[in-house]
Image 1: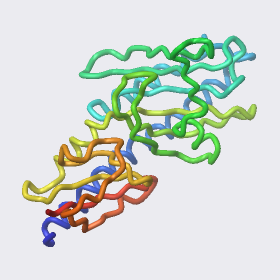
Image 2 (image 1 turned 45 degrees about the vertical axis):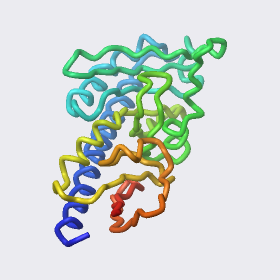
Image 3 (image 1 turned 90 degrees about the horizontal axis):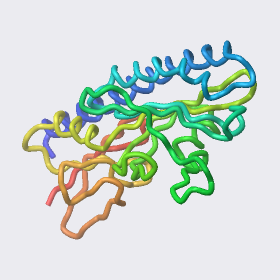
Image 4 (image 1 turned 30 degrees about the vertical axis):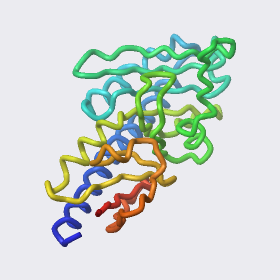
Length: 237
């Protein structure tokens, strides 16, 4: 890889990180608003009180159209008095109005979604820090490969909810392709577990573990840094 290609790779890393950081920053601002809204709500807290959070969620969707496809608040176990669990989740694509996404939260349902066990919820709740998780197939929502950016929502009463934003892999791929020189070698974006997030080649599918095929030379690794433990690598044949 020549100096021009390496510079292109670094610009690409910076662009992807900047986009993710903007979403996480806006989730952080939304988290502050949500804490204030729910602090002033009647107790015990009920699902009806969550309607006041909707404009805040919709604002994040509007600010990041074309990248973020879904935003929502996932409630801690026992936080609501009229539901053991609840996800106030909204989705919008192609400039359409936001629509509520209903998840199956009844353990007796065949498609029961046990979201507290998922990394996007469990990790920020446990660490108290933002998290970037995926890619994974969103079987409970879109059935697409998805990345979730999430921040903890810590309340004075001890409950910790999670505020998340779903990003389709296609949004990351657009950033990847739009940031590279036309003659740059094949590029693969990997998460911290060596799973492919996105790539410039159909050979490496999102969600799969990177395979080091014979005859392929891997080089020019660039870390994205920040909250993203991702890296870009090049494949030259």
